[in-house]
Length: 237
Image 1 (cartoon, rainbow, N blue to C red):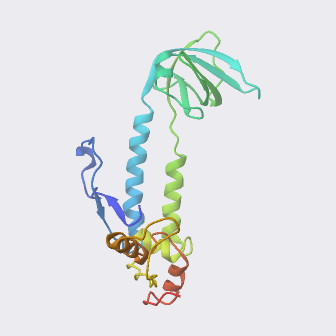
Image 2 (tube, rainbow, N blue to C red):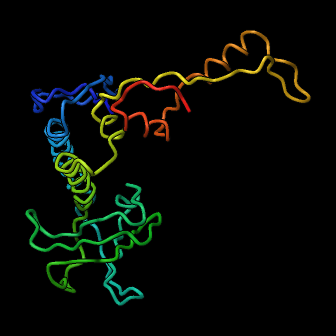
Image 3 (tube, rainbow, N blue to C red):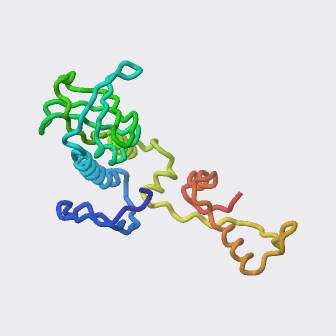
């Protein structure tokens, strides 16, 4: 998100936006303040959160047989006998929901412990009540995990409210207003060679010299003293 944003306008009608198979082009954008940055990306995060939540509550198997067991730590384990669930490629640690009815009258949420071709073992972390032993057929879906979006919203909010949440270099880089750093001052040797190798020809020497003059793309010590003096151009030390 540093200084660029996908071609999505805040005023666009999201309901009429059609999904695309190709990634949208990236457009350089600058922000006047982190309050404006929060207003734009906070809205995008809410929209992404709603879209991900709607996608993850889709039922994977509506008639999955479940056998109950107990884990090593004495926590309940649901062994879901479902080829549909196994073929959806759940990974160990993914959150899944087991429930009854629509809307759910009973629900349990847990993380995947083991996956094979015909079953998935889920360690239950929470449920509304202990399931009835007479009920063996349940519905299974992905469980909504809001933690990643909450962390991103908290980070954007901290950026907007605290000037000291990051260095000045990173702030200006994210806002897209970082001026180009001056080229490095390098003293080149009269010849470019190494033991056992032939001397570089003119095109090779030009390419190496051009690369040596480019400022490093990552934050480095020169950026610190560059900004401490108000962004004035300095010679390299």
